[in-house]
Length: 130
Image (tube, rainbow, N blue to C red):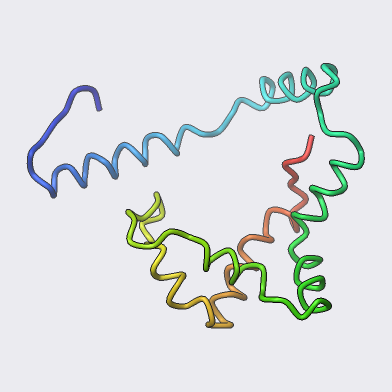
């Protein structure tokens, strides 16, 4: 991209879109280097304790969160999260403004779709916990 500049809104929009595309397409770490970093963290004794790991794992278990909310008769965790987003801000890299989620936060189909999408990495066995 370099030093490309523009005063035209349309061109600026295209430059920003290209910048995001370029930035996020490069976010695939080298598996060998990633393994070295993870091993270094484990060896440094700075990783999570077993209790912290279990607590974080439970917090990331979205099915468990649904069960806890239902048992306590509380507001749905995802709806609560959506209610706390800032609206009237620029959309993120996905291009969807927060108002979309906010206006449809009571739509059970959207909530179900979002929960399923959020659960995919966990169901595939991916974990962010070291």
